[in-house]
Length: 247
Length: 255
Image: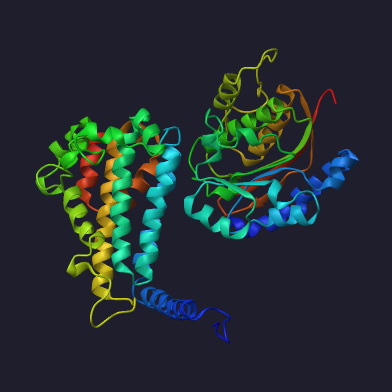
């Protein structure tokens, strides 16, 4: 399989940074000029270029950055590289965010949220992407609960041969109850999604539907897909600019 | 007076120059002779990522698992530097923190007292250690008892002359500077790679990681059953050296 950190520079230059620049154009001038946007990024000690690139583009500064890594030795390494950014984690983000003791819940909201699960050495096993999608929803909910009006969300994952379980995604989402929300529908997708293109479409649709659930609208950009092996495993990255529907 | 070359005071310059040279040489010699053993040790250290994730909801894990990890990590570093006395001392500290974690994981009030530096409760335990005199707290735990029952005598952790007690005693000789465990020898004052000392440390390291992984599985059996089979097999195959121990755990966990 292709070494994922080596692909990240393409994600940054072709998808993430252009989306953030576009977001910059809709920000109030005061925020755009301040360079003080808060960034949450799931990152890797082997390639954390998104941090330096977003900084250099003038959107944030090191003290406004929260970098998540799932590993104790990787945290040690990142601390040699990107302090005074806040480096947190040593658990898997997707396992931690539903917990009442989630360590960064008081740091929300963020204006740039980079949920790059491919940077966290994912265990390629069934149910992984479904958990990431649950974490995506919890993240959007926390943004809403803390009053954020607009933000960028970047979601990247490894799609391997494991099928996506539509029912599981719907049940988990509907388990996060919201008054006035009639429930998630993904009827346009197969019950067990095995084709990579359908998985990508499903992830895009989910991003949009989860935003609607929390009163946001999303303007998506084209996803970026990169093959990782000959068996069809690929890295899928989607991005969206999210704004309050009423705003 | 400061050195003309480094701008440092003389004692500091002597220490800095000599230690940078010795530690650098020790690292290079260790990697030349025992690179795979170091990589294997780091793979074992990385298992604490799995435990950190699996036990994140426990009130004591955020404080104690990073400490267990760092003792393990520093032990590897000290071994690479040829500082075997300190590498072994770290292992005793790692074991004790793991034992303490298992006790505190189900004693939130005592953990709160301990976190505040109030250790008066220990006098009521009848032991200076929370795991009790002769590990009497730990060997009362149901899963530990069952492990001892199904394990052959020489694989038991606490019963009789158990492995935990044995390795703790061995490591204590480094903490208390017994003559065989001194860092310096008449023929070797500076830290340096030494094959016998390295492999003595490496045997201790593997035994400590095995004991800790077994204890964490026994202390948190339901949580262990709940993690993915990939992570279960990493802990079993990387963390536990002996196949007899692995079989006992499989029987006990029903996996």
